[in-house]
Image (cartoon, rainbow, N blue to C red; front, side, top):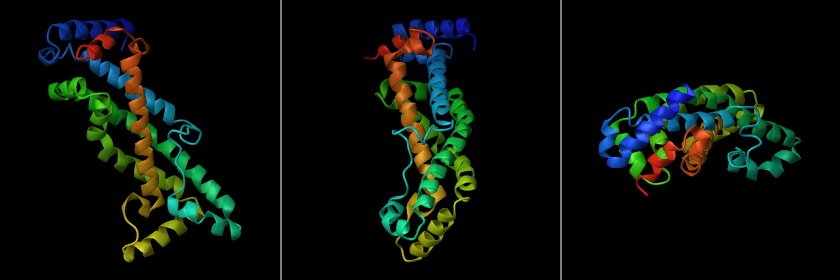
Length: 226
């Protein structure tokens, strides 16, 4: 979207919302600024995570080893495989970095498919309404897209296969459940958590500094219901 068109869309949104912010949402042009800001914010989150070190070097989203492996670290280190644990943790984070770019098309499509009711909920739903919207629309399909990419990376680690086998045996005894039952399931969920955390950060930026997203007009849109 060209800057002039982007800015004009946001100005139109702000002026339409000004009279009656909720009623104005029936005007597709008026909600264009909101959609543009959400698309920009979600794309920025993906760009920050989907690069080398995006997870590994970011304390907010860094993926640690599953707790059961971390607790077993001293015993594993005694067998001379401590380095394999470090390699697995690094691989887990790189797997998330490789998977996250797959999110961009789904996030953009979620914005484009936004309904009038969705827009109303975002404007009236509080400080996490943008993040909640993306979770609702994309968490399930993103998990399906992330899992095979993550598995392709983590399967290269010998410890990953051994962990999955051990957890499989534990599962038969009812001792393992949920996404931690496999390394790839664990990493996929942590990758999603990290993505939505960064979207939440971008949401704060949209509300606090709308100029960084192209126009001060979007700030007026979010400020109308304060």
